[in-house]
Length: 271
Image (cartoon, rainbow, N blue to C red):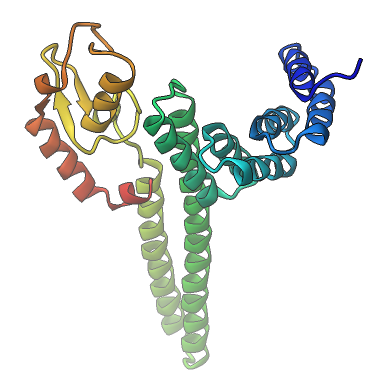
């Protein structure tokens, strides 16, 4: 008896649960042959591709799914994951943000999966930007030192006394030290680029933008706690005490600390 597309999908799901991803893909392939208008068949196959680290294939399946249903949360989520692994950080973040917004609109609970993926994507983008900056600094430092060396050689060729030559060399060493010290300080500041935990929300773990405090004395970012109250329940996530939106009070002291930190650390905007 020929299996229906739904039966094939269910069989594929069983293979997936058993971590037999290639077998699951085979089932989803057959389901798609029977009915290529069901987005779930493509998102299920995309998830198998992700497990097998076939990032391009996962992207292709997610995009096929989005052609059928552009509001599919999993399609955007899996696409963001695949794009992240391919190093397309901006596109990955855009897809993950779309997944996050759609999940919120559709009142779907993905736990911390989407926000966690967003944090990873933003961190990787930041690291990529930092690596480029470091390389640019190294090239600039090398270029400046080379200019100092050339200037020194030019001055030495214009004098005819050992004393004058030694003086020029001493000046060159002084300039080398000054330039290298500046770049060493920049490098030291870069290594210290970190956001203190107390400035991060206890739900998203990202830098807070609008801190509010609950009757239990816990500070959250307003956007995160309001989303929690709407989607999860009317209670404090940490203390589990009853909590409503009207009980949230702006934490002005924390806001002042945040504003000062941001003002003193311009790199935060790119983090």
